[in-house]
Figure 1 (cartoon, rainbow, N blue to C red):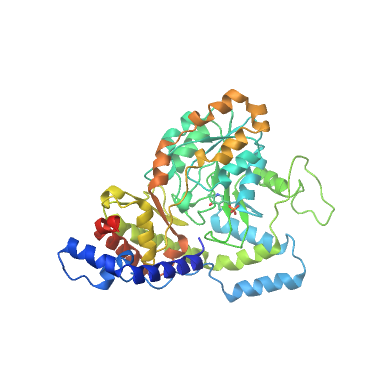
Figure 2: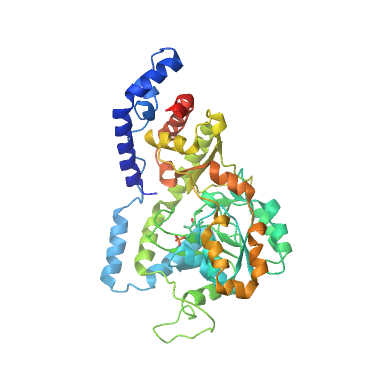
Length: 453
Ligand SMILES: *Cc1c(COP(=O)(O)O)cnc(C)c1O
Protein backbone atom coordinates (compact mmCIF):
# COMPACT_ATOMS: atom_id res chain seq x y z
CA UNK A 1 0.00 0.00 0.00
CA UNK A 2 1.28 3.45 -0.82
CA UNK A 3 1.64 5.18 2.51
CA UNK A 4 1.58 8.71 1.11
CA UNK A 5 -1.59 7.99 -0.85
CA UNK A 6 -3.24 6.52 2.19
CA UNK A 7 -2.37 9.51 4.27
CA UNK A 8 -3.67 11.93 1.66
CA UNK A 9 -6.83 9.86 1.44
CA UNK A 10 -7.09 9.89 5.22
CA UNK A 11 -6.79 13.69 5.41
CA UNK A 12 -9.49 13.97 2.75
CA UNK A 13 -11.82 11.61 4.55
CA UNK A 14 -11.23 13.25 7.91
CA UNK A 15 -11.93 16.71 6.51
CA UNK A 16 -15.15 15.64 4.84
CA UNK A 17 -16.36 13.74 7.87
CA UNK A 18 -15.41 16.58 10.20
CA UNK A 19 -17.22 19.19 8.12
CA UNK A 20 -20.32 17.26 7.23
CA UNK A 21 -21.22 14.99 10.06
CA UNK A 22 -21.32 17.01 13.26
CA UNK A 23 -25.05 17.61 13.10
CA UNK A 24 -25.81 13.99 12.38
CA UNK A 25 -23.69 12.86 15.31
CA UNK A 26 -25.13 15.17 17.94
CA UNK A 27 -28.68 13.98 17.39
CA UNK A 28 -27.82 10.28 17.41
CA UNK A 29 -25.30 10.54 20.20
CA UNK A 30 -27.61 12.42 22.51
CA UNK A 31 -30.27 9.82 22.03
CA UNK A 32 -27.89 6.94 22.57
CA UNK A 33 -25.86 8.34 25.43
CA UNK A 34 -28.62 10.23 27.27
CA UNK A 35 -26.94 13.57 26.72
CA UNK A 36 -23.70 12.71 28.46
CA UNK A 37 -20.87 14.96 27.38
CA UNK A 38 -18.41 13.26 25.11
CA UNK A 39 -15.18 15.04 24.27
CA UNK A 40 -14.49 15.55 20.57
CA UNK A 41 -11.62 13.06 20.51
CA UNK A 42 -13.86 10.42 22.04
CA UNK A 43 -16.16 10.46 19.03
CA UNK A 44 -15.16 8.56 15.91
CA UNK A 45 -14.18 10.79 13.01
CA UNK A 46 -17.06 9.32 11.01
CA UNK A 47 -19.38 10.77 13.65
CA UNK A 48 -17.73 14.18 13.67
CA UNK A 49 -14.97 13.62 16.23
CA UNK A 50 -11.24 14.20 16.00
CA UNK A 51 -8.91 11.44 14.77
CA UNK A 52 -6.86 9.42 17.26
CA UNK A 53 -3.85 9.96 15.05
CA UNK A 54 -2.95 12.89 12.83
CA UNK A 55 0.67 11.95 12.06
CA UNK A 56 1.53 9.48 9.31
CA UNK A 57 3.37 6.27 10.18
CA UNK A 58 7.02 5.63 9.40
CA UNK A 59 7.43 6.27 5.66
CA UNK A 60 8.77 3.50 3.43
CA UNK A 61 11.42 2.87 2.17
CA UNK A 62 13.80 4.24 4.80
CA UNK A 63 16.50 5.94 2.69
CA UNK A 64 20.01 6.79 3.90
CA UNK A 65 23.11 8.36 2.39
CA UNK A 66 24.55 4.84 2.05
CA UNK A 67 21.93 4.11 -0.59
CA UNK A 68 23.04 7.17 -2.56
CA UNK A 69 26.74 6.35 -2.45
CA UNK A 70 26.30 2.71 -3.39
CA UNK A 71 24.10 3.59 -6.36
CA UNK A 72 26.51 6.33 -7.47
CA UNK A 73 29.41 3.88 -7.38
CA UNK A 74 27.56 1.52 -9.67
CA UNK A 75 26.59 4.34 -12.04
CA UNK A 76 30.19 5.51 -12.41
CA UNK A 77 31.64 1.99 -12.67
CA UNK A 78 29.78 1.44 -15.92
CA UNK A 79 29.30 -2.19 -14.84
CA UNK A 80 25.56 -2.19 -14.58
CA UNK A 81 25.02 -5.89 -15.25
CA UNK A 82 25.20 -8.75 -12.73
CA UNK A 83 28.65 -8.48 -11.13
CA UNK A 84 30.51 -7.63 -7.94
CA UNK A 85 27.64 -6.06 -5.97
CA UNK A 86 25.23 -8.86 -6.77
CA UNK A 87 27.80 -11.46 -5.75
CA UNK A 88 28.60 -9.57 -2.55
CA UNK A 89 24.92 -9.40 -1.77
CA UNK A 90 24.46 -13.12 -2.40
CA UNK A 91 27.28 -13.89 -0.02
CA UNK A 92 25.98 -11.52 2.65
CA UNK A 93 22.38 -12.70 2.40
CA UNK A 94 23.39 -16.38 2.57
CA UNK A 95 25.53 -15.66 5.63
CA UNK A 96 22.87 -13.58 7.36
CA UNK A 97 20.37 -16.41 7.00
CA UNK A 98 22.83 -19.20 7.67
CA UNK A 99 22.23 -20.77 4.26
CA UNK A 100 24.93 -22.33 2.10
CA UNK A 101 23.92 -20.76 -1.21
CA UNK A 102 22.09 -17.67 -2.36
CA UNK A 103 21.04 -16.82 -5.91
CA UNK A 104 19.88 -13.25 -6.59
CA UNK A 105 17.09 -12.92 -9.15
CA UNK A 106 15.08 -10.15 -10.80
CA UNK A 107 12.05 -10.62 -8.52
CA UNK A 108 10.38 -12.87 -5.97
CA UNK A 109 8.27 -14.35 -8.73
CA UNK A 110 11.43 -15.22 -10.65
CA UNK A 111 12.98 -16.74 -7.49
CA UNK A 112 9.98 -19.10 -7.32
CA UNK A 113 10.20 -19.66 -11.08
CA UNK A 114 13.90 -20.55 -10.81
CA UNK A 115 13.14 -22.97 -7.96
CA UNK A 116 10.49 -24.78 -9.99
CA UNK A 117 12.89 -24.65 -12.96
CA UNK A 118 15.61 -26.19 -10.80
CA UNK A 119 13.22 -28.99 -9.84
CA UNK A 120 12.20 -29.48 -13.46
CA UNK A 121 8.50 -29.03 -12.70
CA UNK A 122 6.39 -29.27 -15.85
CA UNK A 123 3.12 -30.33 -17.49
CA UNK A 124 1.46 -33.27 -15.71
CA UNK A 125 2.95 -32.34 -12.34
CA UNK A 126 0.93 -31.10 -9.39
CA UNK A 127 2.14 -28.34 -7.07
CA UNK A 128 0.51 -27.80 -3.70
CA UNK A 129 -0.18 -24.18 -2.73
CA UNK A 130 -2.17 -22.32 -0.07
CA UNK A 131 -5.07 -20.09 -1.14
CA UNK A 132 -4.15 -17.21 1.16
CA UNK A 133 -1.27 -15.71 -0.80
CA UNK A 134 -0.21 -13.29 -3.49
CA UNK A 135 -1.02 -14.38 -7.06
CA UNK A 136 2.67 -14.99 -7.91
CA UNK A 137 2.73 -18.22 -5.86
CA UNK A 138 0.17 -19.70 -8.24
CA UNK A 139 1.33 -17.94 -11.40
CA UNK A 140 4.69 -19.75 -11.34
CA UNK A 141 2.80 -23.05 -11.26
CA UNK A 142 0.66 -21.99 -14.24
CA UNK A 143 3.75 -20.78 -16.13
CA UNK A 144 5.06 -24.35 -16.00
CA UNK A 145 1.71 -25.83 -17.04
CA UNK A 146 1.69 -27.74 -13.78
CA UNK A 147 -1.57 -28.21 -11.87
CA UNK A 148 -2.12 -26.01 -8.82
CA UNK A 149 -3.59 -27.97 -5.91
CA UNK A 150 -4.97 -25.82 -3.11
CA UNK A 151 -4.80 -26.87 0.54
CA UNK A 152 -7.22 -24.88 2.70
CA UNK A 153 -6.07 -22.31 5.26
CA UNK A 154 -6.02 -22.74 9.00
CA UNK A 155 -8.28 -19.80 9.73
CA UNK A 156 -6.67 -19.08 13.11
CA UNK A 157 -3.17 -18.68 11.67
CA UNK A 158 -3.98 -17.58 8.07
CA UNK A 159 -1.48 -20.29 6.96
CA UNK A 160 -1.70 -23.60 5.06
CA UNK A 161 -3.53 -26.11 7.28
CA UNK A 162 -1.01 -28.95 7.75
CA UNK A 163 -3.84 -31.30 8.77
CA UNK A 164 -5.20 -31.06 5.22
CA UNK A 165 -1.86 -31.42 3.45
CA UNK A 166 -1.25 -35.16 3.33
CA UNK A 167 -4.54 -36.01 1.63
CA UNK A 168 -3.65 -33.57 -1.19
CA UNK A 169 -0.46 -35.45 -2.08
CA UNK A 170 -0.61 -37.82 -5.08
CA UNK A 171 2.06 -39.64 -7.12
CA UNK A 172 2.05 -36.55 -9.39
CA UNK A 173 2.94 -34.06 -6.61
CA UNK A 174 6.21 -32.40 -7.69
CA UNK A 175 6.47 -29.72 -4.98
CA UNK A 176 4.76 -28.16 -1.96
CA UNK A 177 4.93 -24.37 -1.68
CA UNK A 178 4.08 -23.28 1.86
CA UNK A 179 3.83 -19.49 2.10
CA UNK A 180 4.90 -17.67 5.28
CA UNK A 181 2.16 -15.16 4.77
CA UNK A 182 2.50 -11.81 6.46
CA UNK A 183 5.90 -12.99 7.74
CA UNK A 184 4.48 -15.64 10.09
CA UNK A 185 5.97 -19.11 9.79
CA UNK A 186 3.91 -21.91 8.29
CA UNK A 187 3.86 -25.07 10.43
CA UNK A 188 7.23 -26.31 9.16
CA UNK A 189 7.51 -29.30 11.53
CA UNK A 190 4.42 -30.92 10.12
CA UNK A 191 4.87 -29.75 6.52
CA UNK A 192 8.48 -30.98 6.35
CA UNK A 193 7.59 -34.31 7.99
CA UNK A 194 4.77 -34.98 5.52
CA UNK A 195 6.95 -33.88 2.58
CA UNK A 196 9.78 -36.15 3.71
CA UNK A 197 7.46 -39.11 4.14
CA UNK A 198 6.31 -38.73 0.53
CA UNK A 199 9.68 -37.61 -0.81
CA UNK A 200 8.31 -34.31 -2.15
CA UNK A 201 10.49 -31.17 -2.24
CA UNK A 202 9.36 -28.07 -0.30
CA UNK A 203 9.78 -24.61 -1.83
CA UNK A 204 9.25 -22.01 0.89
CA UNK A 205 7.63 -18.81 -0.35
CA UNK A 206 9.36 -16.47 2.11
CA UNK A 207 8.68 -13.38 -0.01
CA UNK A 208 7.07 -11.71 3.04
CA UNK A 209 9.27 -13.31 5.69
CA UNK A 210 12.76 -11.79 5.73
CA UNK A 211 14.44 -12.77 9.03
CA UNK A 212 11.33 -14.52 10.29
CA UNK A 213 12.17 -17.71 12.20
CA UNK A 214 11.00 -21.25 12.83
CA UNK A 215 12.63 -22.71 15.97
CA UNK A 216 15.36 -20.09 15.69
CA UNK A 217 16.20 -20.99 12.10
CA UNK A 218 15.57 -18.34 9.48
CA UNK A 219 12.60 -18.87 7.20
CA UNK A 220 13.64 -19.74 3.67
CA UNK A 221 16.37 -22.12 4.86
CA UNK A 222 14.22 -25.09 5.91
CA UNK A 223 12.93 -26.33 2.58
CA UNK A 224 14.75 -27.46 -0.57
CA UNK A 225 14.80 -23.76 -1.47
CA UNK A 226 13.41 -20.58 0.07
CA UNK A 227 12.31 -17.64 -2.08
CA UNK A 228 12.43 -13.95 -1.22
CA UNK A 229 11.12 -10.77 -2.83
CA UNK A 230 12.80 -7.38 -2.67
CA UNK A 231 9.93 -5.55 -4.32
CA UNK A 232 9.68 -2.15 -2.68
CA UNK A 233 6.76 -2.96 -0.38
CA UNK A 234 8.64 -5.92 1.16
CA UNK A 235 10.66 -5.78 4.38
CA UNK A 236 13.91 -5.52 2.37
CA UNK A 237 13.61 -3.67 -0.92
CA UNK A 238 15.49 -2.69 -4.07
CA UNK A 239 12.52 -1.64 -6.19
CA UNK A 240 12.36 -5.09 -7.74
CA UNK A 241 14.48 -8.12 -6.92
CA UNK A 242 14.46 -11.57 -5.40
CA UNK A 243 16.61 -14.38 -4.05
CA UNK A 244 16.68 -18.14 -3.70
CA UNK A 245 18.33 -19.67 -0.64
CA UNK A 246 19.31 -23.32 -0.56
CA UNK A 247 21.67 -25.71 1.22
CA UNK A 248 21.64 -28.11 -1.72
CA UNK A 249 24.59 -27.57 -4.08
CA UNK A 250 22.97 -29.30 -7.00
CA UNK A 251 19.80 -27.15 -6.64
CA UNK A 252 21.96 -24.03 -6.35
CA UNK A 253 23.62 -24.87 -9.66
CA UNK A 254 20.38 -25.81 -11.38
CA UNK A 255 18.63 -22.62 -10.25
CA UNK A 256 21.62 -20.54 -11.32
CA UNK A 257 21.67 -22.12 -14.77
CA UNK A 258 17.90 -21.69 -15.13
CA UNK A 259 18.16 -17.99 -14.28
CA UNK A 260 21.07 -17.36 -16.67
CA UNK A 261 20.06 -19.00 -19.96
CA UNK A 262 21.74 -22.15 -18.78
CA UNK A 263 25.17 -20.69 -18.18
CA UNK A 264 27.19 -21.69 -15.17
CA UNK A 265 28.42 -19.43 -12.39
CA UNK A 266 32.00 -18.05 -12.63
CA UNK A 267 32.14 -17.97 -16.40
CA UNK A 268 33.69 -14.83 -17.82
CA UNK A 269 32.49 -12.78 -20.76
CA UNK A 270 31.08 -15.02 -23.49
CA UNK A 271 33.48 -17.81 -22.69
CA UNK A 272 30.86 -19.83 -20.84
CA UNK A 273 29.74 -23.39 -20.82
CA UNK A 274 26.13 -24.37 -21.34
CA UNK A 275 24.59 -26.89 -19.00
CA UNK A 276 21.86 -27.69 -21.48
CA UNK A 277 18.19 -27.35 -20.66
CA UNK A 278 15.35 -24.87 -20.79
CA UNK A 279 16.17 -21.60 -19.09
CA UNK A 280 15.61 -17.87 -19.07
CA UNK A 281 17.25 -14.58 -18.09
CA UNK A 282 16.01 -13.40 -14.72
CA UNK A 283 19.30 -11.95 -13.46
CA UNK A 284 19.59 -9.17 -10.92
CA UNK A 285 21.34 -5.94 -11.95
CA UNK A 286 24.20 -4.25 -10.08
CA UNK A 287 21.90 -1.38 -9.08
CA UNK A 288 19.67 -3.76 -7.16
CA UNK A 289 22.64 -5.59 -5.64
CA UNK A 290 24.21 -2.33 -4.42
CA UNK A 291 20.93 -1.05 -3.00
CA UNK A 292 20.29 -4.31 -1.18
CA UNK A 293 23.74 -4.20 0.42
CA UNK A 294 23.08 -0.73 1.80
CA UNK A 295 19.46 -1.49 2.76
CA UNK A 296 20.60 -4.58 4.66
CA UNK A 297 22.27 -2.34 7.25
CA UNK A 298 18.92 -1.64 8.90
CA UNK A 299 17.33 -5.05 8.35
CA UNK A 300 17.97 -6.76 11.69
CA UNK A 301 16.99 -3.73 13.76
CA UNK A 302 13.77 -3.27 11.80
CA UNK A 303 12.95 -6.97 12.13
CA UNK A 304 13.36 -6.68 15.93
CA UNK A 305 11.23 -3.55 16.12
CA UNK A 306 8.40 -5.09 14.08
CA UNK A 307 8.47 -8.28 16.12
CA UNK A 308 8.34 -6.41 19.44
CA UNK A 309 5.69 -3.94 18.32
CA UNK A 310 3.66 -6.76 16.78
CA UNK A 311 3.72 -8.72 20.01
CA UNK A 312 2.77 -5.64 22.03
CA UNK A 313 -0.08 -4.77 19.67
CA UNK A 314 -1.41 -8.34 19.85
CA UNK A 315 -1.46 -8.12 23.63
CA UNK A 316 -3.81 -5.16 23.41
CA UNK A 317 -5.96 -6.17 20.42
CA UNK A 318 -6.75 -9.65 21.71
CA UNK A 319 -8.42 -8.06 24.75
CA UNK A 320 -10.99 -6.47 22.44
CA UNK A 321 -13.85 -8.93 21.79
CA UNK A 322 -14.34 -9.26 18.04
CA UNK A 323 -10.67 -8.66 17.18
CA UNK A 324 -8.76 -11.91 16.74
CA UNK A 325 -5.06 -11.44 15.88
CA UNK A 326 -3.59 -14.18 13.67
CA UNK A 327 -2.32 -16.95 15.95
CA UNK A 328 1.31 -18.00 15.52
CA UNK A 329 2.37 -21.64 15.58
CA UNK A 330 4.50 -22.53 18.61
CA UNK A 331 7.59 -23.02 16.43
CA UNK A 332 7.44 -19.44 15.11
CA UNK A 333 10.21 -17.84 17.15
CA UNK A 334 10.13 -14.63 15.14
CA UNK A 335 7.33 -13.20 13.05
CA UNK A 336 8.67 -10.94 10.26
CA UNK A 337 5.36 -9.01 10.26
CA UNK A 338 5.33 -7.97 6.64
CA UNK A 339 1.66 -7.62 7.46
CA UNK A 340 -0.09 -7.35 10.79
CA UNK A 341 -3.19 -9.48 10.30
CA UNK A 342 -6.29 -10.05 12.40
CA UNK A 343 -9.83 -11.29 11.97
CA UNK A 344 -12.69 -8.90 12.53
CA UNK A 345 -15.95 -10.35 13.85
CA UNK A 346 -18.79 -7.92 13.11
CA UNK A 347 -21.21 -9.78 15.44
CA UNK A 348 -19.11 -8.51 18.37
CA UNK A 349 -19.24 -4.97 16.95
CA UNK A 350 -23.04 -4.55 16.84
CA UNK A 351 -22.92 -6.01 13.28
CA UNK A 352 -20.87 -3.12 11.95
CA UNK A 353 -19.77 -4.43 8.53
CA UNK A 354 -16.03 -4.94 8.00
CA UNK A 355 -15.96 -2.33 5.20
CA UNK A 356 -17.43 0.27 7.54
CA UNK A 357 -15.09 -0.75 10.35
CA UNK A 358 -12.11 -0.28 8.03
CA UNK A 359 -13.42 3.05 6.81
CA UNK A 360 -13.87 4.23 10.40
CA UNK A 361 -10.40 3.00 11.39
CA UNK A 362 -8.76 4.66 8.39
CA UNK A 363 -10.54 7.88 9.26
CA UNK A 364 -8.93 7.69 12.72
CA UNK A 365 -5.54 7.87 10.97
CA UNK A 366 -4.97 4.10 11.03
CA UNK A 367 -4.79 2.91 7.41
CA UNK A 368 -5.90 -0.69 6.87
CA UNK A 369 -7.13 -3.02 4.17
CA UNK A 370 -9.18 -6.20 3.81
CA UNK A 371 -6.39 -8.25 2.24
CA UNK A 372 -6.65 -11.09 -0.24
CA UNK A 373 -9.71 -12.50 -1.93
CA UNK A 374 -10.14 -16.29 -2.37
CA UNK A 375 -7.40 -17.11 -4.88
CA UNK A 376 -8.65 -20.63 -5.61
CA UNK A 377 -11.80 -19.03 -7.04
CA UNK A 378 -9.97 -16.46 -9.20
CA UNK A 379 -11.19 -16.41 -12.80
CA UNK A 380 -7.67 -16.18 -14.23
CA UNK A 381 -6.92 -19.68 -12.91
CA UNK A 382 -10.10 -21.06 -14.42
CA UNK A 383 -9.28 -19.37 -17.73
CA UNK A 384 -5.79 -20.88 -17.71
CA UNK A 385 -7.09 -24.36 -16.92
CA UNK A 386 -9.70 -24.19 -19.66
CA UNK A 387 -7.23 -23.02 -22.31
CA UNK A 388 -5.77 -25.42 -24.88
CA UNK A 389 -2.49 -26.48 -23.15
CA UNK A 390 -4.17 -27.57 -19.90
CA UNK A 391 -7.06 -29.31 -21.62
CA UNK A 392 -4.56 -31.20 -23.80
CA UNK A 393 -2.34 -32.30 -20.93
CA UNK A 394 -4.89 -33.06 -18.21
CA UNK A 395 -8.08 -33.79 -20.16
CA UNK A 396 -11.53 -32.20 -19.85
CA UNK A 397 -12.72 -34.45 -17.01
CA UNK A 398 -9.88 -33.54 -14.63
CA UNK A 399 -10.37 -29.87 -15.36
CA UNK A 400 -14.14 -30.09 -14.97
CA UNK A 401 -13.81 -31.37 -11.41
CA UNK A 402 -10.94 -29.05 -10.45
CA UNK A 403 -13.35 -26.62 -8.75
CA UNK A 404 -14.80 -29.34 -6.52
CA UNK A 405 -11.34 -30.71 -5.70
CA UNK A 406 -10.04 -27.28 -4.74
CA UNK A 407 -12.67 -25.89 -2.41
CA UNK A 408 -11.29 -24.00 0.58
CA UNK A 409 -14.25 -23.17 2.85
CA UNK A 410 -12.14 -22.00 5.78
CA UNK A 411 -10.19 -19.66 3.52
CA UNK A 412 -13.43 -18.29 2.05
CA UNK A 413 -14.48 -17.24 5.56
CA UNK A 414 -11.01 -15.89 6.34
CA UNK A 415 -11.09 -13.64 3.29
CA UNK A 416 -14.30 -12.07 4.59
CA UNK A 417 -12.91 -11.47 8.08
CA UNK A 418 -9.31 -10.34 7.54
CA UNK A 419 -7.96 -6.87 8.24
CA UNK A 420 -4.33 -5.89 7.56
CA UNK A 421 -1.89 -3.23 8.62
CA UNK A 422 1.32 -2.81 6.60
CA UNK A 423 4.81 -3.50 7.96
CA UNK A 424 5.91 0.15 8.11
CA UNK A 425 3.22 0.84 10.73
CA UNK A 426 5.15 -1.40 13.15
CA UNK A 427 8.40 0.55 12.78
CA UNK A 428 7.57 3.49 15.03
CA UNK A 429 7.51 3.88 18.82
CA UNK A 430 5.26 1.80 21.09
CA UNK A 431 2.92 4.75 21.39
CA UNK A 432 1.95 4.15 17.74
CA UNK A 433 0.65 0.72 18.81
CA UNK A 434 -1.25 2.32 21.70
CA UNK A 435 -2.95 4.63 19.22
CA UNK A 436 -3.89 1.77 16.90
CA UNK A 437 -5.51 -0.08 19.81
CA UNK A 438 -7.17 3.10 21.06
CA UNK A 439 -8.71 3.74 17.63
CA UNK A 440 -10.11 0.19 17.51
CA UNK A 441 -11.57 0.52 21.03
CA UNK A 442 -13.12 3.85 20.11
CA UNK A 443 -14.86 2.34 17.07
CA UNK A 444 -16.06 -0.59 19.15
CA UNK A 445 -17.53 1.75 21.75
CA UNK A 446 -19.50 3.60 19.08
CA UNK A 447 -20.23 0.60 16.86
CA UNK A 448 -23.96 0.71 17.44
CA UNK A 449 -24.20 4.35 16.36
CA UNK A 450 -21.80 3.79 13.46
CA UNK A 451 -24.03 1.04 12.11
CA UNK A 452 -26.87 3.53 11.80
CA UNK A 453 -24.75 6.42 10.48
C1 LIG B 1 5.63 -10.30 -3.23
C2 LIG B 1 5.33 -11.73 -3.24
C3 LIG B 1 5.73 -12.58 -4.28
C4 LIG B 1 6.33 -12.08 -5.55
O1 LIG B 1 7.40 -11.23 -5.42
P1 LIG B 1 7.70 -10.13 -6.55
O2 LIG B 1 9.04 -9.63 -6.18
O3 LIG B 1 6.63 -9.11 -6.48
O4 LIG B 1 7.72 -10.84 -7.87
C5 LIG B 1 5.47 -13.93 -4.16
N1 LIG B 1 4.85 -14.44 -3.08
C6 LIG B 1 4.44 -13.66 -2.07
C7 LIG B 1 3.77 -14.28 -0.89
C8 LIG B 1 4.65 -12.29 -2.12
O5 LIG B 1 4.21 -11.52 -1.10
